[in-house]
Length: 494
Image (cartoon, rainbow, N blue to C red; front, side):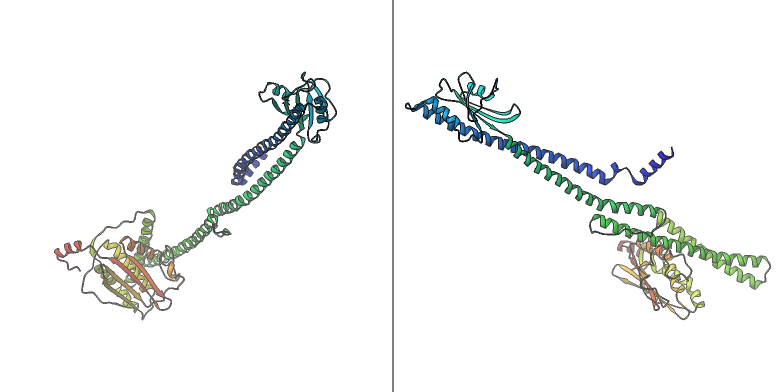
């Protein structure tokens, strides 16, 4: 029972050979090639046999016709002894090395032979019987007579006598058969070479496919277990090589995502622990007794840390909604600059305490956009909060809003620490944090970018390490009809 289980395990591990790509290809291809080669060899044998046997038959028939003409001339020569001349012709036949000439009397008996030997006893002559029945007076037979494969041609003479009524020519086909055998041996050798070449090239070709696929399969199993370190060698530029490269790119992304996820878990854990520790500490302090000053200070800390936790939870919920496709907008025609001003008011006092200057030249116009005012305010709050977070005391934050064609362009620039060039393309990725020393979940910019994209706009980030960062938001203005409707309601919109 244990041995049977082991065999089943091995079969699952290595796969049944009959089900592998290589074995299926070998069976299918060799079957087709074998059938084609069999058909070709049969055709070669048939046509070559027809050619050589036909050539031999034509040659023997021509000799028979020539002999019959000689006998006709001898018969017409009245001065000659016809019977003796026939005997001399047969006995001195000049092609006796190639074929045997026999004279047959009217009783169907062989009376003379160019070999000097006459057959003993009964002797089957199908060609003679055919010649007697044929209007042309000629009969041809190809086949075995006794133990030998022969070609026999019998021709009835035009001037028969008592000693001769027909001439029979018999040629052995042994040389022809030997030649055909040599041709077929060469053909079979070539066929075997074709099979070997096709098999070798096929195995090489299938191996070039099956090995990368096997590596992809084994690597995918390692990925399923969480190991993203292995890569597949790319040895060609064909579809398999492209698949391998795509698989490696996917592995890079998975490894990067896994690293970002781990960093995110670590960061979120730290971000949650810090406010929770502060809240817990002040709660215990206040529970142990306090004076009014301590109470006010503790409640202020608890309130601030609670708001921080609330923002973090909201970001995580937004991210969850984006991932599940449940992130929606409640759109209406709004003044986007009003939402920008509301977001800035939240940070005015905080900026003063941290000695950071915020400048904003309030435009003398309003900008109507179709959007979700709460979500847009969330974007502005996130960007201004980041600018303030990464700007040291004495730094500046500048906010500029202007119209360009049918869009409104809002730029928020700071003189903070900036972002490294290698980190800049990744800052809008989910869970990515370029600076791990600052508070944040790493998904604020990703959510902000998603919100702006859902409004049909663009969020761009430009930064120089040690100089500062500029975040530019471009939003399309509301259609003119909607802006006109708002004008009627008493709003001055562009």
